[in-house]
Amino acid sequence: MTKSETASDPARELSGKGPSPGINGSSGEGAGGSGLTRVTVNLNRQAVQALEQVSAATNYTKTDTINRALQIYAIVQKILERDDGVLQVKHKDGELVQIHIL
Image 1: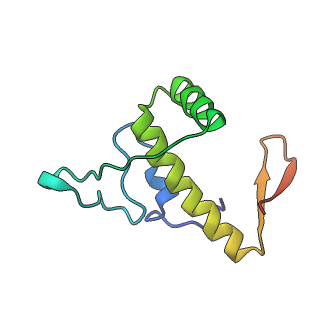
Image 2: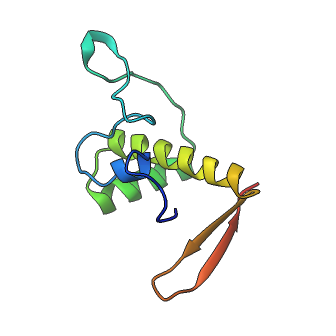
């Protein structure tokens, strides 16, 4: 994530503790105007453990955790497409780490 990302970028919208907006900032379309769409997924053991761990650490519901994870994944995907498959993370101590996602 660079400082040049705009305020309308989904990453900026992830800072609140309320329900997460859609990728484009909208709440999505769902039955009854709730803005939610029910989706059934099958998670492997590692994904369930990660979901429980992140939900507990952030105090987000599992639904909000999954919503946020998908939005972050979309941002990462855009960065990877833009930067030839390399995601760079700069830690507070200045260390730069390159992550290659295959």
